[in-house]
Structure formats: structure tokens, C-alpha cells
Length: 107
Image (cartoon, rainbow, N blue to C red):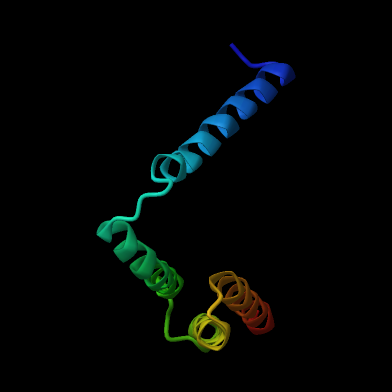
């Protein structure tokens, strides 16, 4: 049975509320608590996220400069911005912008 437009809108709202609740639950449950595990995760997660993103960027890179040059430029920009400002948001957005610009320039 196909959904009508109001049915689709209702489904999207329900999914959005559930997603928001799942993302807020850990913060609400752990408010005011500071365990050694949480301290370790707070220190290790930013680097872990960067490593995963770098590995994902390099997946499928070939020896052609049009393939590896944008990836290397994006990773270098991300690392440079992070070392300069220590801002994960700036690093991710700046590195992504450099990667996209280099990819478009090489196309």
C-alpha cells in the first residue's frame, strides 16, 4: 500500500524524532559523570575519526595523479588546518573543500 504525502511526512517526523532521541540519550544519561573511559574516548576519538576519514579518502586511489593528488591535497590541508587551529570542524570543512576543489581542477 503506497503512502500518501501526509503519511510520508509523518514517517519522516517519526524517524527524525527517534534519531534525535538516540543521539541525545548518551549525553542525558552521562550528564555530570566523568569516568576514565569517557576521558579516554574524548581524547582518542578526534584522532580516530581523522584516521578513518583519511583511510576512506585513500580507498580506491590509483597511481594516476588525477586520483591521488586531490586526496593528498585534502589530507594535507586537513592536517595543516588541524595543527594550526586545533578545530575539528575547520579541519574537516577546509580539507573537504581543498579535496573537492582539487578534484574539480583535475577533472
